[in-house]
Length: 438
Image (cartoon, rainbow, N blue to C red; front, side, top):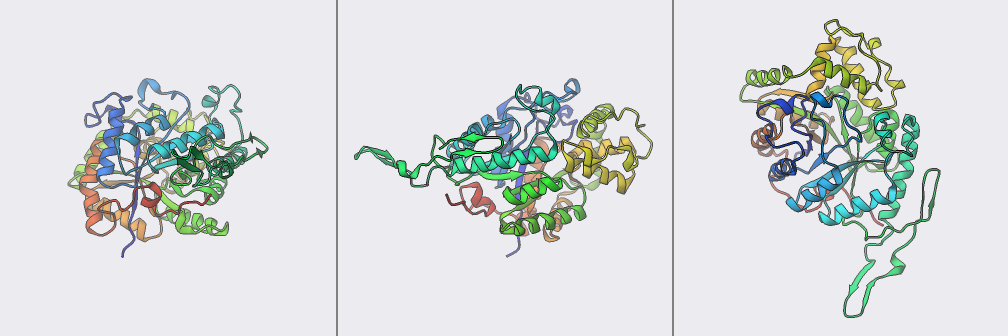
């Protein structure tokens, strides 16, 4: 049997292209209308996707006048989606920098119970000066390595809380008057550098044991963290070669810490503009790009580089890597800045060209072409050791998702590369992941 792809839908406002909110084919619903997210999730579930994913930020974007990059809080939203769906996995972002382990463990355990075992936690170790100002006690200038060191302890505490109830702790003997076995519920008594948590959690162990653990760090520190904890990794690669290097590195790191590589799935992002002909797909892509404002793109690029001043860079002069700050000095998304500098090193684009490339999918793999071309590219990455599947990032929602599920997914199914029905009920079963023992 040929290897099959895993597919996750990344739902992002009205689409992943920064101008999607302006496009006439984007949803007419208001940005805060939960029915838009429900519609997208149901489309993905009808196509038998493994999961959907909601990202998060903790502050208002600086370009709010010209941007629709705001969204509902993920865990609350996923609770609503759990009752609007029956099979698809539900993954949400929550920060170890601006959360408490007990509250987060309780929220995601609750979501796993509500959804009957379909929850996933995307672990982020947030750096945000703007976000930090919204949390009075938070250190908004925590260094990159320090964030991961704190995040390491945070995840250990959360796992311990989920395991503080044995699977057989609930008896629910109504006739005998015995609800639970206290000997199967235990305190964790954690005392560490950052947290002191007594436990146990005040609700039973999640149906999946733990919600699926997802991570997206691509720096060396982030990769080491992912190798220890992540079961699914979202990653950004514009080219197959760098994706292959990342894939091999992550699998080797996982094996080195005693984990089975097949229990660590790598899902690069893919943003596909799809039409009946390549020419038509390129016309649609140009149509979206023409709705962008390069000065807004410059502001977002500056934000990627820790707020660096890029105002001196001309729009139409080829860039060199030294025109951008060194990614090693970046305290925010170090892996993403390395990707951007890599594009500049390889392609020597002008700033205008770089911003156009980033406007579509923020450095992820983009394909502009026919359904067959998109399917061919996905299968090529799978068979070339670059991916276990994809984090699908439609440039326009729900329009390009409908095209993807209606025209690309059937090709993948006919070629035996994607499921035609769900065979399990939990997210772990969809992904082929083992259930952790208590």
